[in-house]
Length: 73
Image 1 (tube, one colour):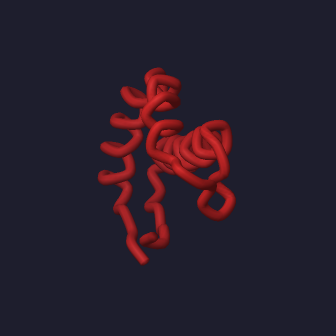
Image 2: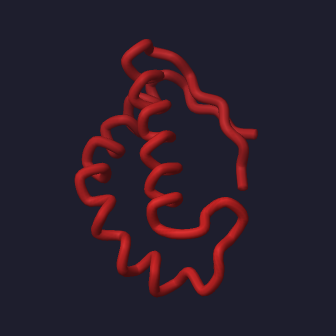
Image 3: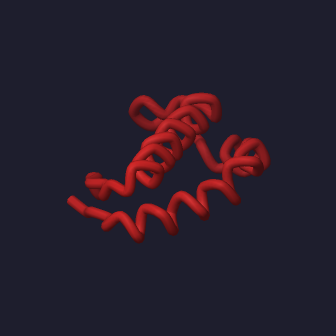
């Protein structure tokens, strides 16, 4: 497990705001390096959806000044 304190969540939210507009630029490298589907990440849309949903979690937590708990992969 890992956790981020509210001030760390705010910093991550800032970075997400910078990265989100460029998420589509990862399609080509993703397709090039994914040789076979892994679990439920089968293609770029599923990867993009996962990252975007976590971006929403981080954004909502930052707005509420909450901490975030996650699992290391």
